[in-house]
Length: 258
Image 1 (cartoon, rainbow, N blue to C red):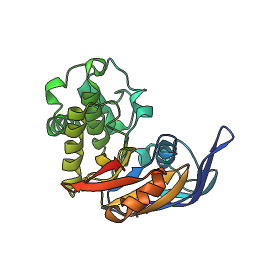
Image 2 (image 1 turned 90 degrees about the vertical axis):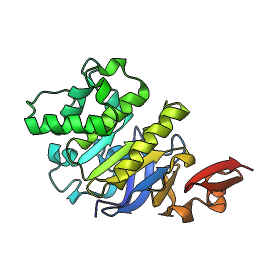
Image 3 (image 1 turned 45 degrees about the vertical axis):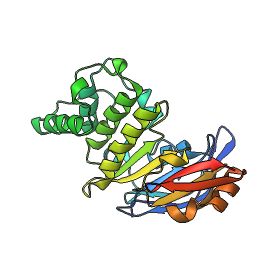
Image 4 (image 1 turned 90 degrees about the horizontal axis):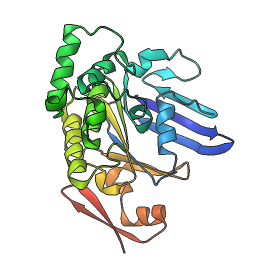
């Protein structure tokens, strides 16, 4: 089991952010987590990464139970995270290559001395994700789409067992978004790469590789299960509180208000 969330609730600044969350993710499953802004998606994922601890309930990630087992940097090396909370901490003068290398140490900034094996892997990831041509440019000079590719490459440097993509397409135009989604689709097709949790508030971003979907609303699980059973007209009409129609194009859902 990659993660188990049992009856988890979270209070931040005196407010209930999450309530009675139950969620299991098995190895090899790729999940989409869908919710509107303020639904608690980022809080849930940051709890999985051990930035937060639950107010009540149990969280186990990659066999480590929060509050019982020692977590430390070893666990974070096993989890690849792409999130705004991480992007805002990146040293913008570091090159794309340095940032990718730092993923081998699960650090912000490159403080360790990379081995030749690490350097080779970083170069390969930069090539595979289409970043190699700007490997020596500073993070500050990169476009939003280029930055996200670099951060995904960084997340993959530590051979993670779980890859968390927290709204990675935010701020991208249509073309850059689709290019990034193609990268994510390719990653999902490699059986040696990690289980993916993809967070979004856009239904049309849910790729065919995400066979399961969890809907989060007002800090609670609205429903979860197989994507084709979750993303239906009836379920999403109730979820969004407006009449909607879902059509499928190339195995991707397109949402329209009726």
